[in-house]
Length: 316
Image (cartoon, rainbow, N blue to C red; front, side, top):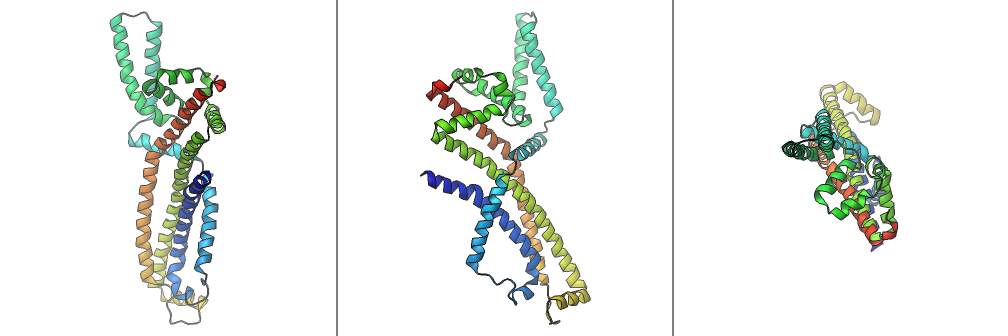
């Protein structure tokens, strides 16, 4: 069963993203060489076995898939945060003011002598500010989103869960990634089932980060294909002398048109459609990526809580 999971993870986490990137490269090559099919397929220039091409494609997919997995998820995460800030019209300056107001009102409630009415008004203002704060904090924070995790424990988890994490030093749970990595390491060593869940959540974020970068590169390849096809159309349609010159470079037959104008137009249309689809996919990834990574962090902390309750000897 574990081997089957590894195979499925390798197929969906490595080979499919790598294969997607290879197909983009193939489309770019087809865009360059396709209009010259009159020459290429009348010679042995592209005379390969179909099985040979499939094997090469799988190998390249595995190699590029592993390279894509190295892409930094933090970069996509930051882009996703900026996209959501822009989409929701949130600015960092407004969020800073909101945070300062919350700190100010909390300090006044603790330190100042006030009447009951004044306290109630302050608490009401604080609650309204916290509602706005909770909608924005997860967008402005950086991985692993410590302030949002603290707020989430207060809002949505039991007191036992909240007190469990409060036992750890604030520097571990709020300001560093080391505690997050410590949680993952502890889970991996004590619970194989939860380790699989964490591995799946992490591979999902890496999958979408890899697809995002593959599509970004693919968009440039498609734009290059469109530009090149337009040059083909202009040169080979309106410049007969240049067309004959290029034909003489490749063949001794001047009567054959080297470039297929109709195929170039078809490639341009399809490439434009692909470019639009790529833009939509990347926007959707940016829109949802921060939420996907938040789920990864939630999975790690929840699993760490479960493991520590089953193994009290490792608790702080």
